[in-house]
Length: 253
Image (cartoon, one colour):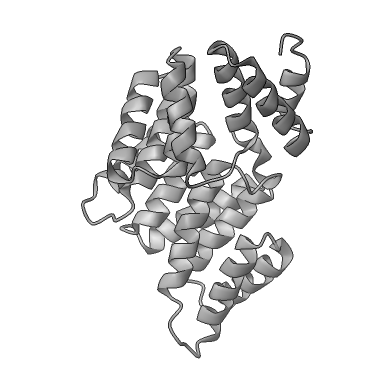
């Protein structure tokens, strides 16, 4: 479970959620004199910049101006997730869904959140609804979240199917590419793992997990020098990560 939500904006799952929030904010970014709209847009912008106090201040002002502002509830829920205040996050996600039950972004966000909280059945119900709706122009996001939910349940083949469906809709979607890199490595298909990484790096930057997998993949392929380069890059860029700690203990690089 992603308990380090508040520690890193680089986690792919939250890049995925930010895409939803930014899209949500940009969809309302028309000229408006409504204070609630202005505070919502400012709150989402500060949230994307990880300026959490300013984000919270503006989102609460948006709700003070209009307590039925579903987008403000949705964004505030994400902020509370980052602060590990999961009960408050759940309350605001559920309020957003109550206000706009057919909002595909809210369905996706709450579905992902519930899966992470161990409420798999409820989470998958929302993700399935969001990912199967033909009006959803970002189905690959919900499909990727559904895949991660199935992974948590140990359903590896179902998870892989979801990730592949996501990539059929958007073949450059970084979170799904990262998951397929991992799955290919776990299956011993090292060349495919390497290929998924190359595709991923075409649209996103390395994180600790991709570097760990890349190092292990190159070692498995016999490319010791490249494996060491990935190891050194992991230790340099993410020295406090669990992956860096694990790789530092390996003596055969």
